[in-house]
Amino acid sequence: MLGVMTVRKDELRFREFDRYRGFYCGLCRAIGQRCGGACRMALSFEMTFLSLLLTSLYEPETARQMRRCAFHPLQKRLMLANEAIDYCADLSAIVSYYDLRDGWEDERRVDRLAESAVLKRAAHRAGESLPRQREAVERYVIALHDIERRNDPNLDAAANLTGDMLGELYVMKKDVYERDLRELGFYLGKFIYLCDCYEDIERDVRKKNYNPLIERSAHPDFAVTCEQMLSDMMARAAQAFERLPLIQDAEIMRNILYSGIWLRFENASERRKAKNEQ
Image (cartoon, rainbow, N blue to C red; front, side, top):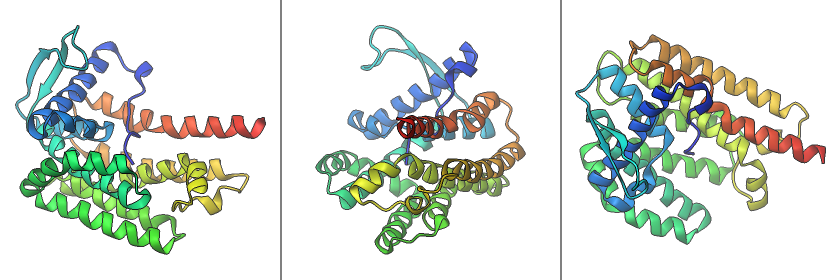
């Protein structure tokens, strides 16, 4: 479910990309500091976007450092640190832990079990400080398993669950921005889930995994129908986003919401089209 909300790098200015990478690297460092170095596997584009969003919205005091790291030992990189980034680091541990456990329970993948063991302690600690968010992820996993067990053909069943969960995570504080943050997270969650389903159809058919799009995939207008459906979700997400008083880094976030988030859909469509033309 992770890895959809990336930037379209070629449409960003150099300073914008450096700023985005400052959040990405800062979040990676925060995960390492708060959860342990091995937990950096929890780093994701989705939590990087949320770090940008919450920093722009709440304007917390932000530290800037140029540092080297184990992944980039030769050149110093900008790393940002603030309350919003720490929040997203804790969320990363929670979400990744339950995602890995879900992978183990669904497919009995030993690698997922081993990776979840690494994150278990960090996820427990983060969950104690963020009980509302932890409970939202737990409810999501339980309800999703039930939908998968019943092989529910309703497109909105699992997608709405994902939206509800992400909407809860977007609410860092119960305040005047809660409604718009929750709505933004809800429609992004639906988009991410269904985009993931669209990309994974062939694999899910082969492995007999649950995917609510499989029955519709044989229709000749399948790609167009999915694009229209996802466009509607993104339009609703964009409405909530534009209602928020965001100034700093707004153009980077718009790059993600209006362009970068479509990269995986476009790549999957091109691969499928090329295969059909062979």
